[in-house]
Image (cartoon, rainbow, N blue to C red; front, side):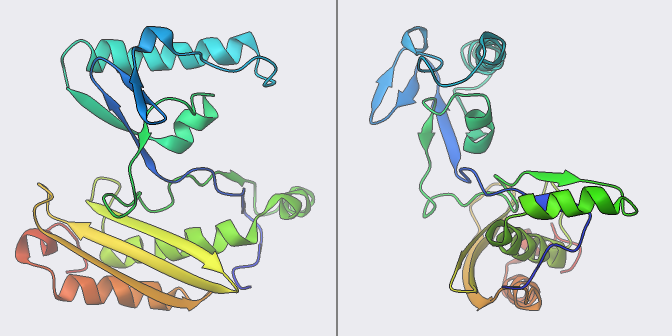
Length: 216
């Protein structure tokens, strides 16, 4: 497929990569809005300990009650992968990708080891997911070519099928009013195509976007 594991970091299979929307006064449960007091924080027998569920409650209450419900904001957007890892899959409404793409690398989880630890590398090789690796490498190559940072208004979503990567990406102005969205398809492991996509998008972007990226 390309991007085979060569040591260092093993990437697990992707979790949800979309963003979740939480509204002041309630959270989304399927197609219905329900009061947060009525939310079940995990089905019985799901294998999660009471400590896990308690940690989820603490984080949820901090985000919703102390930030959203306190009136600091009217709503918040969180990574669905983070909510999933807290056992809070039922919290929030997924934002469709045609409205909002995820950040590059969102949903990915990797394990790092020392370069000289060959025994550990062999173990990590068993855990590495080639599809996730191909997607993450493409998204990161796009972001790197822009010369952006973790604060830059950039989004990228790579999907992998039949040894091909389809990368959909977007760069925006700080207020989101100006945006450039485009896509490219290329073989797995050919990140130069992702870098070219970034350069092409920057070249036709307006100044309010270009000034946010070092590569412009």
